[in-house]
Length: 444
Image (cartoon, rainbow, N blue to C red):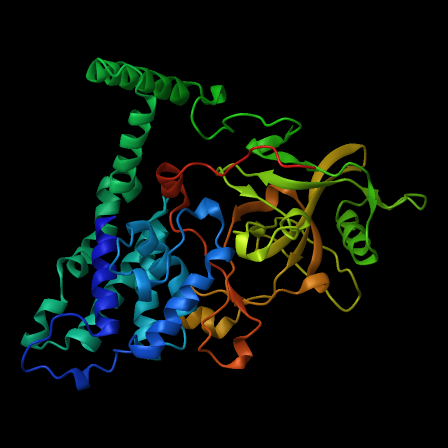
């Protein structure tokens, strides 16, 4: 938490030119100072405009930094602003050489913020952060004594973050987010205010016993990984997924394009479409995911005013099977590849005598490969395809709810219809810092 705050203070201070400057250092030589005047105002408005595209399960969305950066801007806001939205919003705003350097920092932090990290990923994070430090010294500090204060402790800490992860484990285990979440939980559990410390000791003992039982017998599902309560009318699926209402009262016929997408899915299952099927299904509006998020759908979200919505129908999909082409001209192979999509709705279908929960989604285009490489794989810039991207996928291929806001308004018109993927940094950490997504009943 504090590392994020310190890095944000340094980086924003440099881009705005508000960091302390030595008497022998001319501001005219600071070619990285771009967040000033009208540019700063427009950039702040771009950050604020992202609000309706950031799901509520991502936590508190960052406010307009041009108005609120000095008014109690929270650590989580800094995290989402710089490490979730930053690669998409700073593109075209800061000079390209500085942008590439910044993206190396973002990539390294995103990796190390995970709860489960492989050795290979830690080594990649170390490489990215060391390259960032070298670039930072070359571009900003330039080995000038009057800029020595640029190299703060937060920059030095980056040298040790990855090696310490090998020694101590993921930072999720000992970060301030975890401690603050623990304080919040124990305060919520407190019932005997006349003897608070005795009550907390008892709560701590019970929690330790439950944790030990959960480790010894995982099938008991005593931890918060299981859904906290089952809302009325929901349907439990395997792997801790669950279909949540609203449920359409009456069956409706699929559109022709949706029917083509379903037929293509059934081909992958070696199932023939019955000739006498009336093409009618009942739509579900939400899907509970194992990570505690709730993926919603266009069916219900489209009924709400855009300014009152925090969109939660954009999802990450990872397929492990081949999807047959909807037309002879198109073939889409999602064999283990990552895709991002907008969910139209969820539904159940009898496939070869087995009830399956499925999702009708609209896949986005593949990312701009040049931008993906340029940004150290932090910027997935794509476009919504609408009906052209319609596919049917199984429920357990949906892995997470993501944000897909628009790029900076200061980019050329060629980016007007482009969006970028913003995944919540360290989802597992966020579960310890925020409540699970709301799964209360929704009207049919």
